[in-house]
Image (cartoon, rainbow, N blue to C red; front, side, top):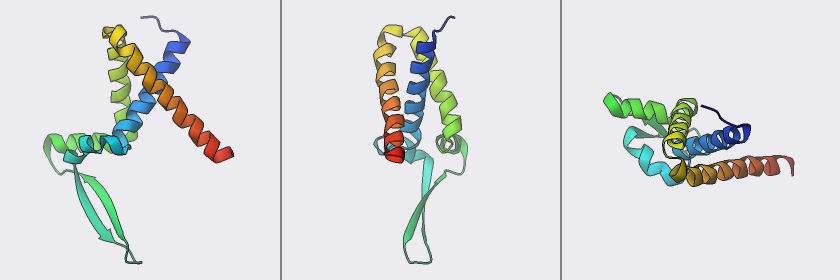
Length: 116
């Protein structure tokens, strides 16, 4: 299995973006929702804080724990992308490239916001 540096960078960026998409983005909230319980607490100022805790037992607990851990989800996202890339290269390449471009755009946006 030979991989070029450019392929490695593209796969890495796409893995980064897929992980962020699964763990943090609003658009995939419906995927995370079945695995979490919503807890609402009132702070000292009277404002309500919402916390999402993984379900208590079984498969839903496992998935909740997985989706609440950026590092854990990242390993599975990377594995999924690499396997998808090697098994279905024609189908996966455009999807992986889109995720990689979006990942790089996110990194550039953070850089711009921080330094400009």
